[in-house]
Image (cartoon, rainbow, N blue to C red; front, side, top):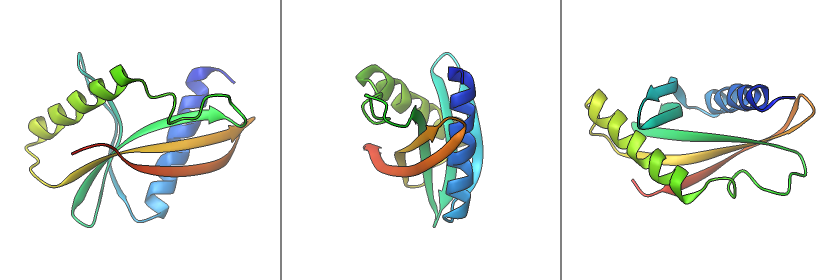
Length: 119
């Protein structure tokens, strides 16, 4: 499976998981060039949740959380701030990670890691 296919599989699994656990998905793949992209924007209980989706093959030596570099986190923070400003949102928000693990073309786990950035 190529990297792009792996990413799409992970994002589909993440969006489905979030909907099943009570989130309302507001937007996906929000392009805020040249700043960056937001994978999933959702809302639950009046709070906006930004989700970075990281997909890894089962038994990968690098976990989805470990794959987030300092520069990616800085870029993600700027993208979140740009989105909030653009949409005029002044609500409470969180920035989270959805870690998706796959084996072949099968999703074997989806886990939300909350608060990867301070909001």
